[in-house]
Image (cartoon, rainbow, N blue to C red; front, top):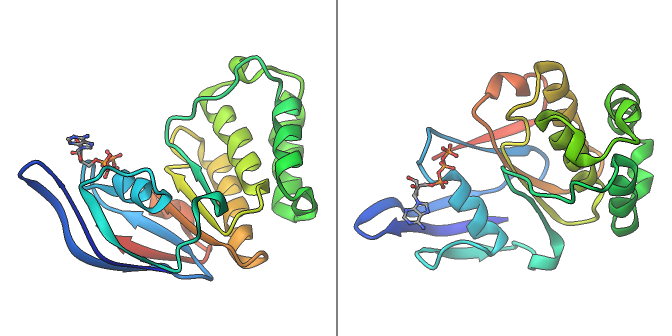
Length: 195
Ligand SMILES: Nc1ncnc2c1ncn2[C@@H]1O[C@H](COP(=O)(O)OP(=O)(O)OP(=O)(O)O)[C@@H](O)[C@H]1O
């Protein structure tokens, strides 16, 4: 997948001009850069929900129905239990993926102990883990995550990233995410795109 001549401006403020971005198919693509450089807006553009002032030619980017996009500040049904939430994702997605070691591990170490709690009762980090687990179950071609590990402790961040890596390694999906913490990606296949 490739974006040619990506440009973004807000009024007179130019954030990107004619950038060419190639997305690796076999690695997690990390959009990296300081606060406010336009990382989230690029993800919005990729997902087809960006502002009109974000433009560029998308080559090989799938249709919106084949894209899973997890926003940074997740809003979800607080009265559903974790079990109900995951079961909903299972219906939409590919529950066979749960046989993967990373899925099993996160289920056992995190999800099982909160399985019957309501999403509204969870901590911010726990909520993120539940929803990232669900997103990874979806059967899409392109997965976009905006800072999936922010607010998550180091141990759980590693587990989440392994889950995301399983999409590219075992499942041949394209993954794009933003992160301010590249150290967490040590040992995982990733390719950095600087903004
Ligand atoms: N609708 C808008 N009108 C004007 N400026 C905007 C609008 N939306 C975003 N911006 C500005 O564009 C810049 C890029 O925003 P964006 O959310 O893409 O940054 P980011 O790189 O993801 O930052 P962070 O790392 O802090 O999340 C910011 O300075 C933001 O204030």
